[in-house]
Length: 240
Image: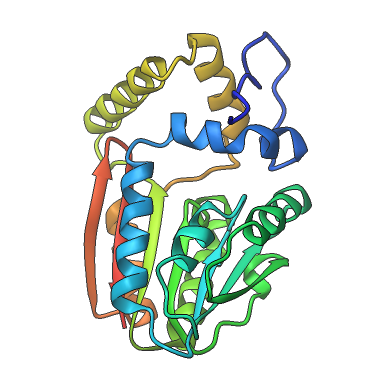
C-alpha cells in the first residue's frame, strides 16, 4: 500500500521543494496523483524497451527516483541489456535499490547516486528523462541533451517527459486551471495545491514544447515526436 501524500495538507511556512526522505516516503502516491498521464507513460516505456532495447546495450533512467521507470524498462529489455538508474537524492537511491532488488528480471542493473550532469553516457539504446530536466538549471539543459545524443547508438531513442508552459497567457491560465482541477479530483485540497505550488516556485522551471524541440534539434536529434500531452504535461520521443 502506497503511503498517502499529505505533505502539504496543513498550513505551513513553505520552503523550497526537495527530494528528501519525507518526499521519498510518499513519492509513488504523489506522482500518481500529481502527473496526469503517468501510467500511460509507464506503458510507453515498456513499448520502448521492447522495440528499441538492443542486445548488449545500456539503457539509462536519469532521475530514477524510486525506480518505477527503471523497473518497467528492465522488465521489457533483452536479458543482455544493462539498466543504469541515476539520482542525486540519497533517500530516493536507497529506496530504489531496495525496489530493484525485489525484481527478478534478467537484465542487469546498477543504481548510482550522482548529479546527472556528471553521468557518462555510452552505448545507449534508450535514455529516459522522466520529469527530471525541469529541475536542472536552465542553462545546463542543452549540454545534458548534447551529452545524451553523443552517447547514444544510432537508432536510439530518448524519452523526454516534462511539465511544460505556454507562450500565451490565456492558454497558460486555461491549462493551469484544468491541471489544478485534476489535482482536486485526486483528493488534493486547495491548500495543498497552493502550498506545493509555492514550494516548487523557482525549483521546477518549465519550458515550452517549442523550447524543448529546439534544444533537441541543436543536440543533433533529427526526428522528434510528441507522444503524450495531458494539460501542462508532455512527453517527446527523440531519435538518433
